[in-house]
Amino acid sequence: MRGKTGVLFGLIFISLFLVAAKYDHLLEMGEKTVKSSECNECHKAIYGEWSKDFHAKAYVNDPFKRGSKNYTATECIACHTAQEIADEKNLRARPVHKEEGINCTTCHLKNNMIYGPYKLTAKHKAEQDESMLKSEFCSGCHLPTFQEWQASGSKKTCQECHMPRSEGKSVQGFLLSALVPKRMIGQHLMSFEKLLMEAALIKGETTRGSVKISLTNRGAAHHMPTGKYGDYRIVLQTQVKEGDGKIIFSQEEIFSTLKKNGIPAQKAVTFEYPISLETGKRYQVNSNLLYQVEGRPDQLIAKWNGEI
Ligand code: HEC
Ligand code: HEC
Ligand code: HEC
Ligand code: HEC
Ligand code: HEC
Image (cartoon, rainbow, N blue to C red; front, side, top):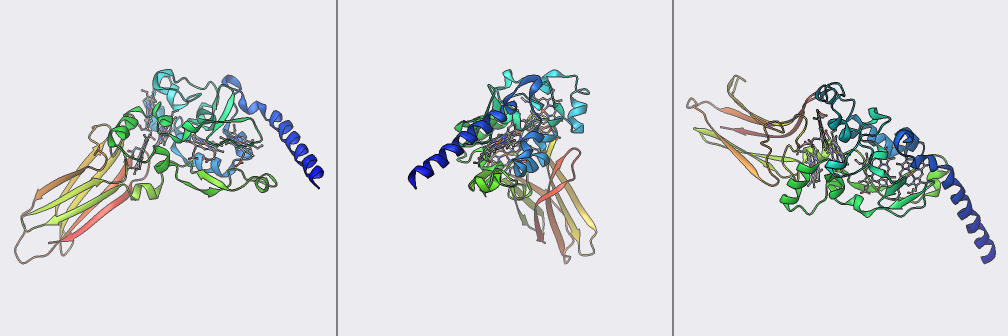
């Protein structure tokens, strides 16, 4: 029995080794770097998430095309389609498949080796790099945000909020998925509805003479919004209406990466609006918080309703 099992495991081991060699082209860099669709042959679920992630749009999105002067500004391209993870000064562009922006090989390939957080027997060669689970991993490209995160003293890493883990398989497909066990997998879609909906809290207080609205960044361990590039906005809209719906007061506060006035982590800002009301009438107060990024639909991420 034992001998047979030994032989069987030996065969499996040898075949795994042979198969690994067959996938050595995945480790090529420079002009020969593979497209992410090659990883999609096996990592279908992760590929599906990444293709919806804005990292995958980092090169093709319109604001970038315009901002980089139709792809002539090389310093922009070095980061938006980086060959590999490096600190800000050492980022350089991948010479091929630029349209894939920040792709699988950007984050997983260096020194002609695929790195992952575990120590798995993959179809291809792979080595373990536990630093992938730390916020420092994101800091080469997201330096200002990383510094805000450090200052916030947050116990959660970038990955814990933006790549929440859940149990699943890292590969899909006939036979292959039957051979690998379930494990904790990090989601590859970094900006998603649930995260945005938990980002902020609006509280209001009304008196006959004023409306006081406070907005707290309770969900982001960095400024809200964060970043030094692009135009990310959080817009607080407050309206006071009479019973018949007539708007008697309307005000908009804009927090944006362009204005550099993002709300720090766990901090609140308060606005007090003086309002003159007629005695005997009732009024509705509505505050809405919108998440606005150029070229994307606005998203309502928090609200508060009150009465006077
Ligand atoms: C090689 C550079 C690079 C690395 C490494 C990187 N990012 Fe990004 N990230 C970018 C760029 C460029 C964008 C802008 C994408 C776009 O054009 O919308 C971006 C955008 C984002 C966004 C915003 C998406 C949106 O709504 O526009 C989040 C969230 C994010 N990154 C999180 C992370 C996290 C977490 C990590 C680490 C696990 C990470 N990034 C690693 C370059 C990088
Ligand atoms: C912005 C950087 C980034 C990009 C782009 C990226 N990954 Fe990842 N990947 C990570 C990080 C960080 C982890 C560790 C996440 C965790 O386990 O918490 C990871 C984990 C993995 C794992 C191990 C299973 C898991 O989720 O922990 C696989 C497999 C993987 N990635 C494949 C891919 C493939 C295939 C692509 C392209 C379709 C891709 N990755 C794109 C950063 C990235
Ligand atoms: C022929 C199938 C196949 C292809 C193609 C493939 N992988 Fe994998 N990969 C695997 C298998 C199998 C594992 C182990 C999965 C497990 O045990 O959960 C794995 C594991 C990984 C891991 C985790 C390694 C670790 O130890 O943490 C990463 C990261 C990864 N692959 C990235 C990639 C990238 C990037 C590409 C494309 C350049 C790619 N893979 C292409 C089959 C494949
Ligand atoms: C405690 C959870 C949490 C942690 C930790 C966290 N983020 Fe975020 N992140 C958020 C939330 C919530 C948003 C959306 C609200 C906002 O605009 O800030 C966000 C938005 C972003 C955006 C999009 C721009 C924006 O402000 O909308 C980027 C880029 C980003 N995060 C990068 C990072 C990086 C890099 C790290 C680690 C240094 C990190 N985040 C750590 C929760 C988190
Ligand atoms: C060091 C890496 C890096 C460099 C260099 C860089 N960017 Fe970015 N870019 C990012 C990151 C990260 C984001 C996500 C928001 C943030 O953190 O600023 C981003 C977001 C953007 C966005 C918003 C994308 C969207 O979906 O709306 C635009 C536009 C943009 N960058 C243009 C540029 C231009 C133009 C240059 C050159 C002048 C440039 N970037 C250079 C990392 C970089």
